[in-house]
Each structure stands twice: as C-alpha cells, then as structure tokens.
Amino acid sequence: MAVHVPVLLVKFGLAFLRYEMRRKRGVRAFKKELRAQNMGREHVNLLTKSYQSAGSVRSLINNIGKGGSILDLARLG
Image (cartoon, rainbow, N blue to C red; front, top):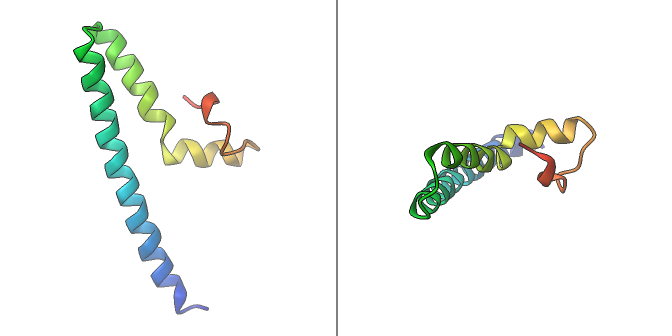
C-alpha cells in the first residue's frame, strides 16, 4: 500500500498541473473574446476574475468543506 502513495502523488500532481494550464488558457481565451466584443475594461476585468475563480481548486475544496457539493459550482465566486 505505501509503495503506491508516491505514484499517486505524482499522478495527482501532474493532473493538477494539466488542469491549471488548461484553466489558464481558457481564462485567456475568455478575456480575449470579451475584449473582441468591445466590452469596457472594468467589465472585462470583473467578468474575467469571476470566471477564473469559478474553476479554482481552492474554491472547490473550500466549498466542499463547508458542506456544499461539487455540483454547486454556480454559487462560487
């Protein structure tokens, strides 16, 4: 059992890094699209910040720790 722990840690670490890279690319694409729609800078920044925080692993974990469900993503941010 203890032999598998390092392997799991590496796998979870790599999965987390992949998730964060995809999330970062998605946030950039979201912000680029908002700018392309000629939206004001304040609105772009506010919406981008909200969009970015919705996929935050820390927010997801905190939400579950407070008795919420991972399916309650709409309430995050």
